[in-house]
Length: 156
Image: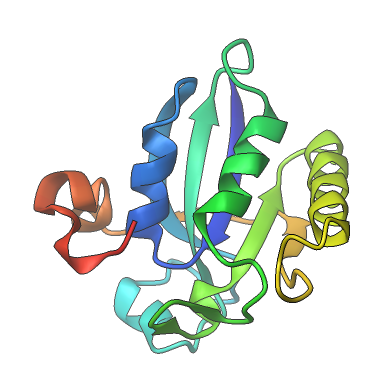
């Protein structure tokens, strides 16, 4: 089992999409990349902690590899818009890959360069590729939010 962490806007939608991928064993939403210890949702939403809303997942590399997760990540959001996904605006909604190993870093950088060079997107990719830091698990009501409440509040 391996761990991967991605930020691509509202964490509810990306958690639901990653959860549906065969080989993804477990998902949790939370916060990463900021400067506040044990941040809470209201703090992160005020855009004062510099945390990104992230999904952290455990995956079985015998069923799915990291490159396949990267491909899914690129398709889930617009990686060319800084600090924004759809109507959600703020650094907490930025596009980021938080790598856990040097291999993940290399694969993420190569994947980004390949997509950026493909001319498939209308602008350059601004996605951060940065070392993972402490994962602060979000409040329980955010976990599997769309599964519990339906997709009405979030576009998938």
